[in-house]
Length: 362
Ligand SMILES: [Zn+2]
Image 1: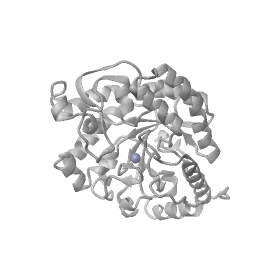
Image 2: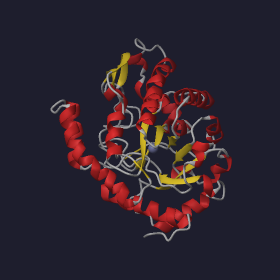
Image 3: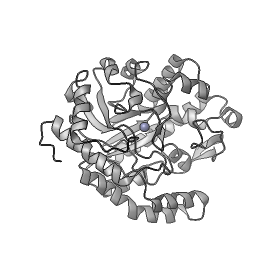
Image 4: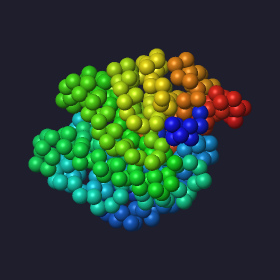
């Protein structure tokens, strides 16, 4: 359990992404359109990302990311570095805003997914660092489409199996670089608990999905020499969450997943309260979501402390860390507000100081 104790109680984390300034969104769009090269885009992004890091440092966040400003989205970063995908070819599955690449040929990786960005992050902060990667399970649901993908991978399960070594190798590289913490983004486990979502995407039995998620996650993290989180949420875009369900159907299963910490949404009304934490596994750290990124009202430090106090009815404070419910902009074009994100992170840190016995700072 040494990895567990290396994470201080009430440490503050981001979930990953920060809103991008408009000019950064333009760089990503032009890179995607091919009007500028990756190298040209990186030169611009190298000037922007230190400010994303500094914003988090100024707010007082312990585990900082690069804001994921290089990524078009938290899952498309995979197909940006691994060949075999038809870009934006798949049908819409979560409303009009998502258009995912679909695997259409056997995958071939042409570059690391995150190591260059991680190295740059480390060079630009003295704080602890967190890097996120998409889980093979969510890649299976978002990037394997029956009408496009069966020639390359006959089943979703075979595609997931092929993604596992790619993500596992990437985790190993991030550990070697000295990144402090890796997070696997896995919103779809919770989203599957919503029957309306399962119906929408054609998933049948929830228990089958839980088993597939656990199996693929444990194979992905096997042998990882670095503290690991898994992130669960309801999905969101433009301040709307995609699903509506509490954690009861899946929370016991978290005990079977071999990560140290779970970063979970709890400020969201869609989480239906913290009572489900009664079943939160006793040997895991909770990443308690205390900031609702979908609510434009900026929380106070006291709001954050009250939310943390409610969770402490069910989980000991020495196993609680604090984070926003989700990344502020998992997709680059998500129209969120950077100044608002900063103010919310300040409140998060202020709340952490209150519950850990400090003076609050704000
Ligand atoms: Zn999320």
